Amino acid sequence: MPHYTCPNCGTSVSSAAHPAPAACPGCCALLQPSDNVVQLTPRRERRPAPVVRMPLDAGDYSPAAARHTLRELRPELGEDTFRLCELLVSELVTNVVRHTTAATALARADMRVRMYPDRVRVEVRDDGPRFAAQDAIAAVEDPHSGWGLQLVDDLAHSWGIEPGAQKCVWFELLTESRVPAAQL
Image (tube, rainbow, N blue to C red; front, side, top):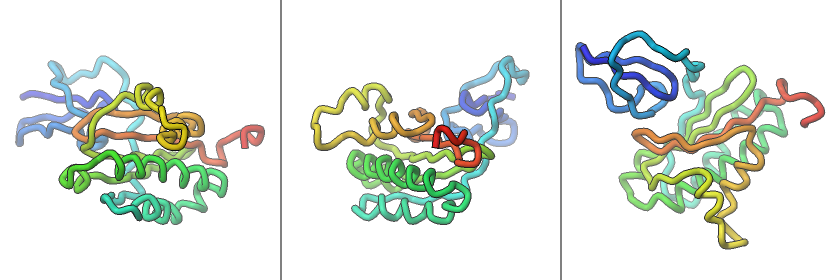
């Protein structure tokens, strides 16, 4: 019975009863065939279920709708982290609206927010063109636009791009309760 393992979160899936999915049910990364069931590497921290999941579309109002959706998390994030999260969400959602042109790709685009004890993780997933993080930042040529990922790079605690069934651009911010006062 074939087994498949997620390279991102370590989830293992068996194809005994049904064909194995192509993507991890937990994080949407592409599953890799696994010759044995024993994992040779330690499992990564399992991602919590999203506390917010919002479909995105091509409308100019999508960044504002995404910011509005975050408001329920304001008490958990604290004011400064909430405002920074709003800014970075606007940048990622704007990129999806501007650079994902196919209607079918946008039909499957969404934003997911996951809360950890010490941080918030925001993921924006879409079927648009793939790109590398450093290439996207280096490609800024127009001094008046294209600075979204540079802002994410400068302001987020961590961020990245994960390949998978969908491209996932994500960032993480430490919550104020876990950030040393000198960094606030």
